[in-house]
Image (spheres, rainbow, N blue to C red):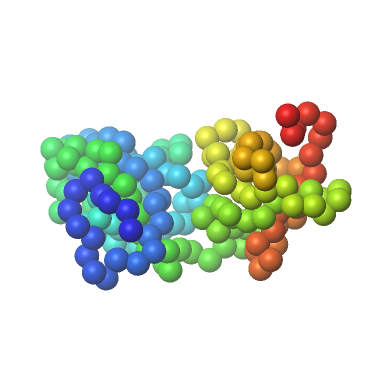
Length: 179
């Protein structure tokens, strides 16, 4: 369980949590907060009645979007001063409440730790240690057996297949990617 900026997590939320983003600023005078979303998927905020911010459950009154940010109106946060107190707070939800994804789509949390295999020879290269999402396309960071890390663009030309049941990712590399 992670520590939070303020407060303690209530017992009903003591299980596996997923970070959705971080409060970056107050918006306007009525207590809205701007949240940098860790995922491009808007559905994580849709149709929710509550959301956890800094470990505390808040009613989610409404959500709107500005580029890669979500603007949330939280119940009980009624003015700019209250919203500013949440700046830097983590926004999260229980993992078992994540929306179902389409076939062939995965949450980053489910990809991490998967074995990465070379498509050409089937040999194990290492494991997926991180996914960088702040670029034009996601980048998979693969920790090789010797401890080095390589970066593989998460596009079909390099990521040949992902098998969620076997927890395997098959990749094709081009010359120079292993250096």
